[in-house]
Image (cartoon, rainbow, N blue to C red; front, side, top):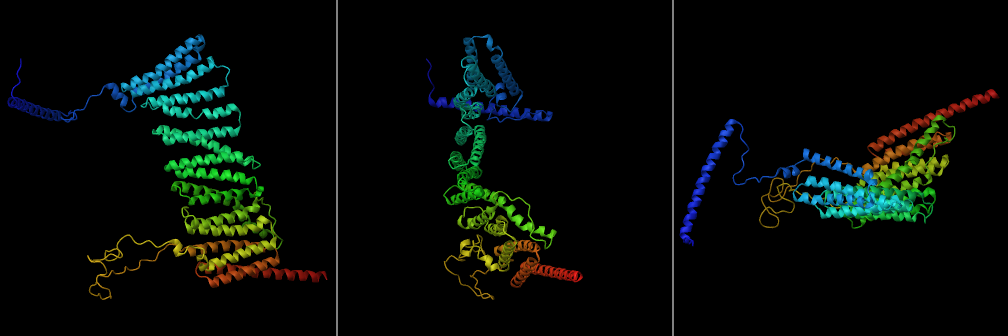
Length: 627
């Protein structure tokens, strides 16, 4: 029988043992320091390891599995590929030498083994090996599906069976990947396999392009849900790629069907398809702010295509572009809705793209109106020039399109504050488009020489008036109240104090001795005015744009007047008078430009008069000889 010592005696024994341990540790540390010094002197000292934080040793297999790509990982990959090739060869070549029971037993056993082995490997932390074996198991499931059709369902439709098999494999791989969470391959493989069932099923039914487009859109919707819910980057990337591919194909098919529809009833189904795609894109933009602008732009374009496709079938063919433009203008009003900023930006961009495309479609008509009169130089006073240039289809509506785009550009910055469009640039563009629309009217309506020249001179007069009087241009610009109050400086003013800040502890103005300049010492001194701003005045910018437009239409009118003798004198006389009036009323570049054009017009009028007098004298001499 053993008796325990008293507590005091046991405490003394423990203290003695601890003292001996401390002494032993001190001797070992001294010996370690001496050994390190000797090894450093010899030049082969190892990296010192902290005494109190020993590094746990890892097994060679675990280190190789968790290290970067190495020879072992390469060998594992090659081994998996070889096993896959062997399994495919066995299924395709040696399959006929076994009965149905043997076939099912062999492939089933191998597949179950290949799918179950990674569970054991992951417990041993052999991740790379588990990935290779799991990849082999996924390939074996595909071979199982192929073997099933060859052995048990030889008469089924190949496309329909592939659709069903792809759906089953996608579900099995997804469940397997969720159950074995550490494997990285099954879930991405399930996403890839999930792209096939619905489109292949639509192809097997023979439903046509509409059914296939709906199946692709449903697949894109599934991809969007997966992309929004996935946590792994690989799964999210594959789902986004699938959504873009299938959704893009569905959109293109819907657009083609909408453009080829000949009646409102025929355009209803493509419109519904495009509207569904637009709704899906807007939902994705709402839930994914990182790509909200791009996704909302696609959704807005799909909505315009859907509504415009139906409206196009109810109007004449020449009004197709205005129909789509009207839908884009209506979409622009949605920017006032309480939506996330990325969605609002995307909707504004989609509407702007439609407006830009419409303006580019109508621009050749205005360009032809400006350059067409140059043909009169080939035969001065030989009659109106014959224009052989083919106009685009529906050119009669080009002035309407240009005027509509100009109205939207002028109104959007005022009525829609969320539209990212600078107001001065929008107003200058609206002025140019309005001028282009007016110039294009004679060409679109095929007016004769007289009305065409009258339109050119009227446009020139209006543009010169706006250029000569910047006060008129200011009427189209925002007032100080519309632009908002000027921002106050955030920093302190002279004297080191912010506006309204007292210099002492007491509130209110602080009095002090009077300075020689009449201010008190407690009164802030006004900062001296800085250098004048070099920013362009919006009114002068608009006036300069009007001057450029006036010069363009004046040149076109002068060339057009060369078609006959009376129109030459009329055009040059009116232009000289307009430029003289503008030079008198304006200042700066407008006066210089107006004076130069006026002098050029006067010289041209003098030359035309000399030619007319010479022609009259030659005609008189010819008459006298004949008499």
